[in-house]
Amino acid sequence: MRAVTPGLALLRVAALAALVLLLWNPATAHRAADAAPPLVLLDASLSMAGTPRDPDRWRRALDSARALARGGVVWRFGRRVAAFDTAPPGDGASRLGPALEAAAARGGDVIVVTDGAVEDFAGLPPDLRQRPRIATIERPPAFDAFVAGIEGPRVVGSADTIRLRVSYGTAGQGEGGRGKGTATLAISAGGRRLAWRTVPLPDSGVVSEDLAFPVSRFPFPGWWALEVRLDGVPDSEPRDDARLHLVELSREPRAVLLAAPPDWDTRFLATALRDVARVAVRVFVQAEPGRWRDGTTLQPVSAGEVARVVAAARLVVLAGDPTRLTDTRPAPRAAVLVWPSAPEARGVDGDWYVDPPPVSPLAGALAGVAWDSLPPATSLADARTDSAAVVALSARLGRRGTPRPVVLVSDSAGRRRATVLGRGIYRWAFRGGAGAVAHRSLVAGLADWLLGEGAGSREQAAPESPEVPQGLPLVWRWTGADPARDLAITLGVLGPPAGPARVDTLRFDAAGRAELSLSPGVYRYRLGGDGDGGLVAVEQYSDEWRPAGTAVTAQPGTSAARRVAIALRDRWWMFALVLGALVAEWVWRRRQGLP
Image (cartoon, helix red, strand yellow):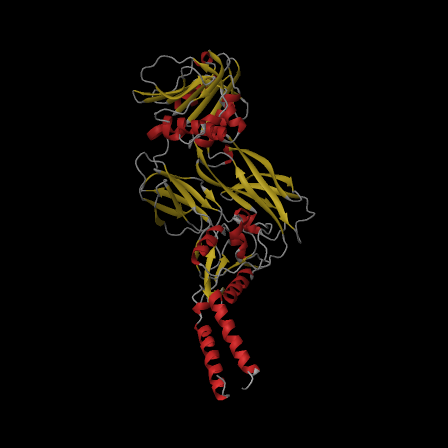
């Protein structure tokens, strides 16, 4: 009998090994054949447009996106996610989160092309941050001086003084600006310089400066666009050197606050009233009995002037000691807010904690306030008996006992009246946070209800902020008493070159908000064909122009291609290997005469 050759043994071992593997049936992971092509997310915020010294940034980004896509898909991201096109970047914000969330639902590899200035990257979940491959477009170092923001009144009277708090600063490094030391902050309107001041430039960061000038420098009343510019600094980015602030000059104030004597409650009330009332507010204080002063300049004012302004006002606020204000004569149809906050006002001292508001005309304005987190009022005056008054807010001493009225409102014979009986309510705003929101909501609700129809604006919608940086939409909120609906708006460019009027539609959502995107400029608007209208502005400024720290750096990312597990029994060639080895062994053995 012939011996078994090594070849026959090898065939038998191969067949048995394949059978053992099929009995074990291990599985291996492989990339699916139908995996999605790569998705490129291209940063289309304004910072990608480059600067005068780096004009090719957007072209480099487009070339990188096309090369990395390799036949895949490209999306633009900035303020929102959009389909790809080669139009210059125009979004005033750079938010990557929504784009990554949409990409996660699609599948496939994700590649991000950006200059690194992504504002929401640090707050994203770790899995979203680590997944994409990131390719960065280099931003050359540059020095920049900028105007960061403006705070000031929106409506002023003819006798007021406009006070603006201007925030400005510097950022970045490079040629120009360093070592200059000072610059000029200038306020201008209608081509006229109204005020200016030489200010020191910080080495980095943002500082604030107050500028003031009398309203008498305006040649006529109406709406004005104030431009605050930082002059005398040779920096790399001139588009963020100026900001706009819109203000309305009214011949006579529609709201007057009389504080006799002034205290902390009246001080915070005056500030809040100027912020929330869309009318001119005049403040008179009486620190000494019988002697009135202007609340802004502290200049003496005659009793006759006070009486004239009060008689013409649509809203009169009587604060302090009621006995000093007995000679005040508001107009018969004027609304009155009584706030007896002075120590002379009779009341019960203690910790008076406010309860959530009941149903009243102010309930809507006071909704959403965290009442449990507010500090207590320090005193509560006695409420006069008035059958027509409605309790809008109440409080309990030490959170126990029977609640007593804090805010009363009434509407009798066409004249609206409100009374605030609590003292020490200023502490809500003093502490900030939820308390400041509550104080502002209370003053805004009182002002809106007291002014009512006819006293304030007849418009059914108003812009949340009349100025917005470039690349961001103007946001409008519905202010009408009826449910929100689509509203026509007519816009005309203010000043040369004056083009044709633009007619658009504000489409409000369920929350009563609508957005309207415009190119930079100052626009005069009118809603629905009626109303007084006003001004809105889209600034040349954008946060995207300012040099920012790199929040995103290059990273390889992790592959998100779909992988599938394939068991060994699912591979047909393993069975063919077993059969082939056994048949080959049998044929070989027969030819050698082996059994």
